[in-house]
Image 1 (cartoon, rainbow, N blue to C red):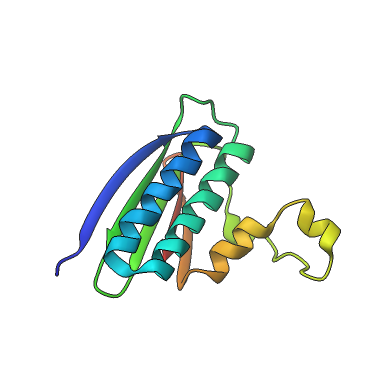
Image 2 (cartoon, rainbow, N blue to C red):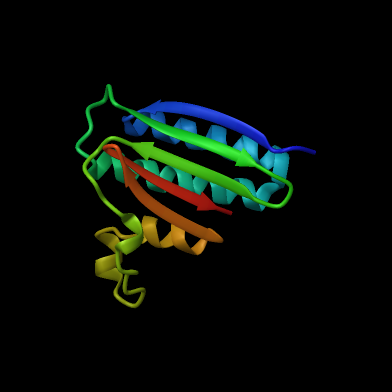
Length: 133
């Protein structure tokens, strides 16, 4: 089986992100199984939600997501035109402090924990997050 590639654009709206992450999860689940499908959906919803919440995009702006599904891995690449921000530089949350956890910060932590490898770059005004699971 060769690598399968998918490219998507999703509007920068929370309601669109929820449905889109479910679609990604289903595509990956069919190719790679339930656990990897779950991870893919979670990574997409967390990364894209952070872009919508903090990226200062309009609802008309698009977030680009590509999937490359190979024999043993899935590579998810998420691109947006919001201000430069490297989520991989965010410190892991203090898992002991429930009040801090309720304020946020778990999404990036989960992305790091559920991926084999995560890379970030900022090229030509675009944030590019590449995650391998």
